[in-house]
Image (cartoon, rainbow, N blue to C red; front, side, top):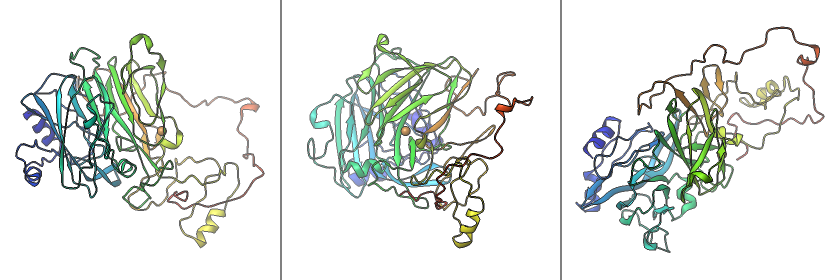
Length: 457
Ligand SMILES: [Cu+2]
């Protein structure tokens, strides 16, 4: 516990102890540590309780605990938080212990667990332990298994973590609002024998979605599907840390989906197997190779592979609109339409207006004025120019010779000679030459959209 505390303090976490404890008036409450930044905090090996191999929550952290009479005690505080989604954009969310998503809770199969939940929200809440096999009265469904936890109150959940696996936690009180505001977190129950299901790097990734108008800070919680920010652990690319992996390590990525739609999660350069769901581990004989796996709403999929292919490999949702940041959806397709001069004319009347590109939507060289507190639609910079992605996208960096447990960004991959795509600079046969002018379709209706790109909402 002491080493975990000093580690977290060193990583920029602020410890809030006495004030929280005195407010609820119970000296026997465990401390409620608070994380003040969106940096990845790889947890050290546990110093109390049974041993396990901790997971790494990208742009997140794991919640410290204390052992009391053989019980593992945690303290979650449900509260409004300010979450940096990526440098340049902050969101006013609801979360736990200073961040959204909440901290990952890690326990060992067979642990008796006691979780204190303090409600600092303006309305009642509860915590449901998604996927856990526990007594009905500990299931956290407001009205069914307990009354709501009123503002200012602290409630206690206690149960045995019966099965090793990957679970989630979230409110079952006003959940449409509370989950759209960011209230969710991961729960990992490690196997009793740390050699079982052992991997070298074990990442957890919670999928979330927000609808935040450019220039504003608070999500619209009535949105059902047309969210404009699709996030991994409440971060959007380029704000998501890379998955740093040493060549030939066995890697696991546990992906949980608490959004309103499914996400086909795709990895480049490797084949993986789905090894676990929220229901438990899949027997090896029942697994098949994949490069994309769909994670439906309310599901968790753990994927595993040997990272034997060095390079920079993307890991992303395959719905292309989910690898975009704030954008509108009511924009006509003007590819092939000659609208030269039109934007300038409209700009004379309404400064700042732009038209969708006639050669596609590539933002490679485009400079648009952005309102305060928003992000470009696709913004990452790679070694060869713009990575035209945002949202649910990040890069897995497989490198030789990294130290065990080294998660520092190693920079861009140096491609060995002869392994890099290149431009053809020889002669082209007639048929392969590019046309002088693009073909124009019949429909030439022209519509404009605001540079905020948010006319669809
Ligand atoms: Cu998606």
